[in-house]
Amino acid sequence: MSAEERATDAPFVAPCRKLAATAPFGWIKKGIADFRRARRQSLMYGGILVALSWLIVGTAWVLGSYILVLALLSGFVFVGPVLAICSYSISRQLERDETPTISRCLVSGRRHLASAMVFALVLMVVFLVWARAASMIHVFFPVAGEYQWRDLLPFLAVGSAVGSLFAGFTFGASAFSLPMLVDRKVDIVTAVVSSINAVLRNKSAMVVWIILIVIGVGIGFATAFIGLAVILPVLGYATWHSYRDCIDASAWPIQPPLPGANDSSQQSDSAAAV
Image (cartoon, rainbow, N blue to C red; front, side):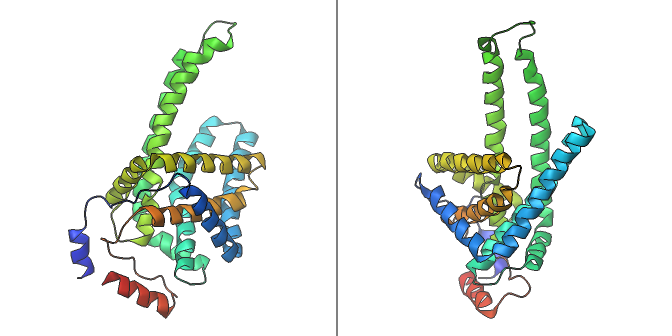
């Protein structure tokens, strides 16, 4: 069956497997293993993310402009998906017994640039609506000159509920969609819907996964972002392995090999596509 016929006959949503609540710990273990196998590339990738974090915080500190910080964060929303694709590409190259190279990661990012930008645009809209909702929530903040902690409960409760709603949608849409784009010839809508479906069907595992992500990012913040040079690549690789464990994307054609891929990986791709 040709790639075109397979893409036409593919379902709207990719099937997903049921995950154990402890599955995220296995993804982290595999992510650490990928980091060790591609230490130089991982540190280079993580260093770029740390530099971007320092740039945003440094700009806020020097200029004291919240408007500028908001603009930089908005721009990072667009760049983030492309940078994430680089980490998935490294894990994919390791999975195919290739030596990862930054040049092939850039090729992978360029190949999926259009889909990544569509995804980033969706995140941008969510981000702007989230910011607007956050400003409206201040109506619940007590206006009296003196107030006690219990007076803040309505503000904190509503703010947490609204923030959780937006964060949950963002996580659900991004959990498996970008790795699926790197692995298969699939449109962004199918990838996002498949990701949300898989998250909803594996709530316990996803809660554990979110907690691990928050802990990792928190450690990165506590180390003035330096720890993110290791943590973010590991989380990126772990995300690739979470996609492999959860999503059955066999109905879609495999992405063609990147330039410089070895012959054995090309032959394995051809065999899997039959």
